Image (cartoon, rainbow, N blue to C red; front, top):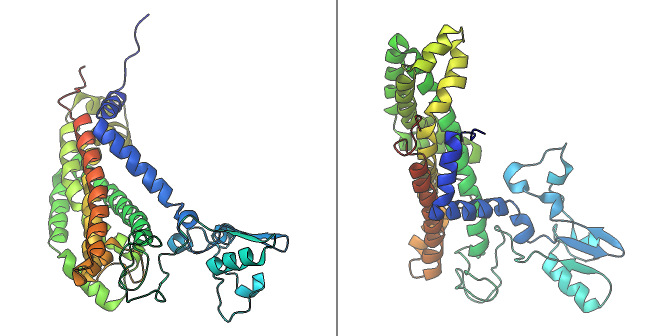
Length: 366
């Protein structure tokens, strides 16, 4: 019985798994990123479960990821429902329940009522100004990585900043690579006048200064998460365009493309079905390094004050606080360490992917 041949992609995937440093880095980073979407259940000032007079309340579940994706009426679980203190029999003028104080009250009363808090019961926006001394406070048993200059927990803000940074980089990389692949495919496949005029447009667009554009936009409006994604994607597609264009020039000269044309295949089908799968190596090899560049870009913009609006948890904003409070070692070490470890994992992944997809190792004749 003839042995079934293994596809080129499976061979490359198997080699990627053998590159332990890159593969384990991918597993660690993917696990951390997926886990970051459950941060409202791990680090939050809202209780997971409240039992009061025989009724159960789930404050954290009713505001799941509200700070990231907003409220959609057709998804009630995304609603940011706020329970005032009067809901649980507390006499207070506050508009939000302090669930840590409520837990202490229930425990002191000795009733069947209880409160289950997240493992780290602090919000990334919560300020602890009532503690001794002025913020920032050094690491302690209550705040493992200390607080920033506004009294907010550094560990919680680093964790939420990780989710924002990775999501931002993935969105920018995906949008810029999708558009850059489309432009490069059209230029490389059709060539001629399309390539000539298209390259001139790419060169003109690439001459626009990115930082000045961000400064001008920031002076007119406060850039939000989505606006920054679109701005960076509008400038991030240029590099991959040239690689895809070169790949299409090389692939369209091969016999399988001529055979597809002879069979009457349309140009879009030839581009998408035949050439594009064979031209994806630059995208896969460069994508991890593009993610690193986009994370650094967001950190730099936040550091300069042109990034995400306050009080969004941001690595760049924490690094800026470390610069302004250089003697507070925890504001210098922990943000830089978190950024270093994350970027190092992505670099390990990129090196493994580049080695696994090296065309010199697995040619199409083997």
